[in-house]
Image (cartoon, rainbow, N blue to C red):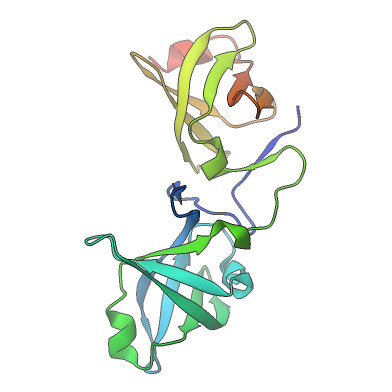
Length: 194
């Protein structure tokens, strides 16, 4: 199978995997600081592409301590190295934007492009049941991690956790109807996770 777990263009989280299914929102970044004196924010995107923010008509800023979220219309966005500088409606000065430092940035899932055939967003992988080709039940995908070589599926079973590379060599199939990820582990892979 040539499946691809999207962790790049227009995709949510490289650093952490977040999706609020109840509100149909996807975590895409974090406000790191105020930028300038006109109320812009500097954001760290959880994808590799700060230009993604240009395609979002609005973002939802979430306060981690209170859990409250507020929607802002995106007026303008531009890249600055690995960051996005974003002008939001309602933020008029530096004091306004400083209040958002450390906050999470969410978008409505509808603003993400549809993945192509055999492509999956990280948040769609969470919760999949994982079995080997020979039917051995390993557990459930509880999170994903980005590493320089490839993404890692964190699979939590009854008595242990497995760290499985998300590579075409190991992923045999994803059965969307049953919510099952079928893998073909290389010899010894499941033992190295002890």
